[in-house]
Image (tube, rainbow, N blue to C red; front, side, top):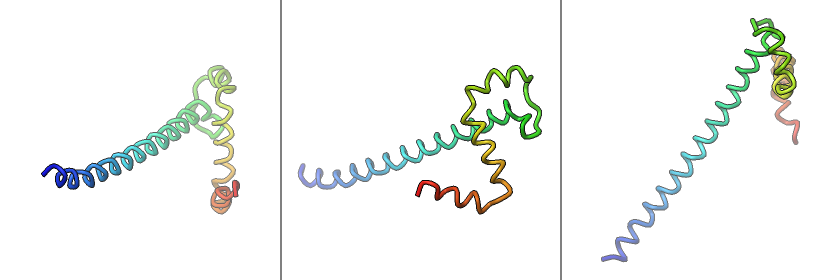
Length: 96
């Protein structure tokens, strides 16, 4: 009786492990996406004066500027490519 029970439980256990891995991967991807979006929001809040939004006092922005070099580069790249959707598409092929 025990060998047949093991034979039945093994596929169920494998399916459970597979589903667990899939959901963990999806959760990780979702957290990475949310982190990127929160960084973008923070960049807009602190460096919004560069794109015409209200921003915090300039001395706070200037103090944060050295720490936000990457975010500023990403924002300027997005502004440059916002008028050219083909440039956005072809920028995906930069690494190839």
